[in-house]
Length: 208
Image (cartoon, rainbow, N blue to C red; front, top):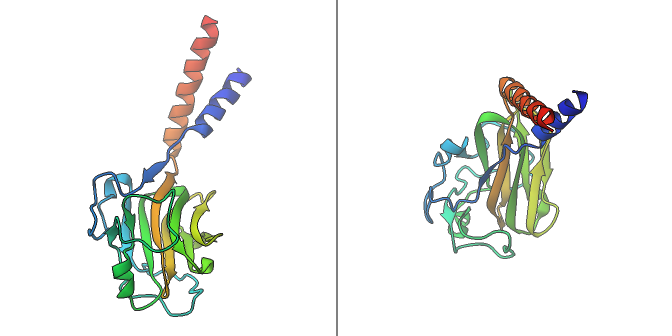
């Protein structure tokens, strides 16, 4: 029985709850302003930091008019695989911003991990993710690790409800694509799935 429980727990923890968004799902088109089109996926997008304080590593002050335009062809230098198709943040919109851009992702359920690709990076410190819990506390942060294209990733967050992305700086256009996040399973869901797995494994063990 102990072995069955360990197998069930392993299968449960390995289960994928990930949500993946690459802006090519048909919900947005080039030129659209990204906002609540992905509410059904569990996330909405807001221009600005939504009241959160994050480091302004480039020092120009944050923009009051961060561009939230979906673009397909108007992309910055250095982008490439795995960024393709639609992505967030147009070059034309960046030219009109009045400071370092940032936007906020608001999740309908708390998330434990998040990752995305950023492209067109020059100053790595100006592109990053900052995760906050429901109380507004900063619980995780990361910045780009390479120029041009970089994967930004945070895990083990436990209960992040909002994530701010600093998407480049005033002199450095950056685009975002391939967003993945894992909602935290509700306890009752975890218990139900665990009991279900144990029951299935016990039936299989009896037949063996």
